[in-house]
Length: 445
Image (cartoon, rainbow, N blue to C red; front, top):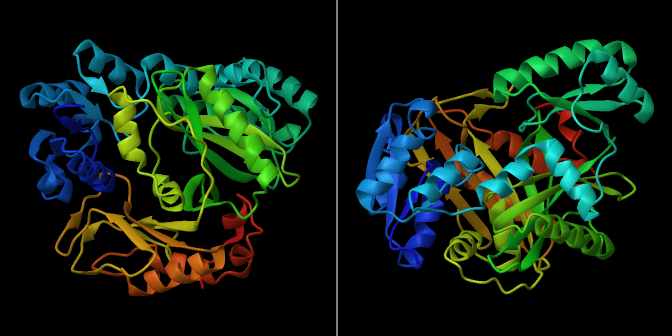
């Protein structure tokens, strides 16, 4: 096992990793920006190193500073968490060159799944269903028009290096192609320094369902069931749950087998997630693979009683996985609590937390790094907490979540708690009969 692990991240995920490391008797090193000097992950780690100014580019994305922090503290492993450098193949490679174990997949695995075109070609070769789309990148507006005519409208243009909805445009008719092509290309270049775009058939009324997988250094791969992430706003997940209310045993078996095929196609090593779009007829299509731990990993942990961070660290240390596939034994729902004003188009609301009361009780888990007196900096993602409610049934889990949300008091800033309270009462949400377009018509009351 590792003698010391550095966490190249911040906030709740850094704190989450520290907790598991403490249970595994692995000393930890926190890195932090000037803006995060008072964050809990700095306080709870065994050691802490300031790596730069508030801007991510000067700190959490500054590879030389992070490697230097690992070297001066004698850390022999780095856990990237999610976001920042978690899917950066160059960072994984630099860690290896410095004899530091990157707690995640190899650079080759990250590259093969990080580029959407390469990932799609890999999945086709592995026999995993994919959405019909262009062969390779779009070379011109005319090329885009030709591909759209073959597929039939609607189509979606996507950035090959994309994520988070950036460089993505839905096109309903030919007269919209030119504008969508140009704007997607420009946004892709600005967001990813790569203006490559491609086209797929747009799947209408889709569910976003992902399969958690784990693979070890010995070729073993298993799946740990699904998460439904269909409640999204501008392609950003708001609520996740497991099992999916749309799932059937037959669909779970088929999607689980496809996810294992996908992971085995690149000899995947670490925990990761295969994301699928599922249409209203329960046809499913590979969308992308996230080669990291995800925000919503807690949902899976609660329904199968499984520490995914611990598994990830053990895999990196060369411990084989059991190889057993898992099915959910409970129902769990996660609400992401963001420092945003849901009554003002979800505008960010950084600032000082003056009063805090965290919910508890049976079936409630809260992963967070905030405390009374803590100032939320304006430089990073607005998520400040996750509430996970778990119960025997979906209805009971929703009721537990309602109760937990009513207990959560955060004053001094605006949060998305009121949004989640309204969502839990929504008849369509409670019915389970929704898709990724649910939030398109959502209005706060």
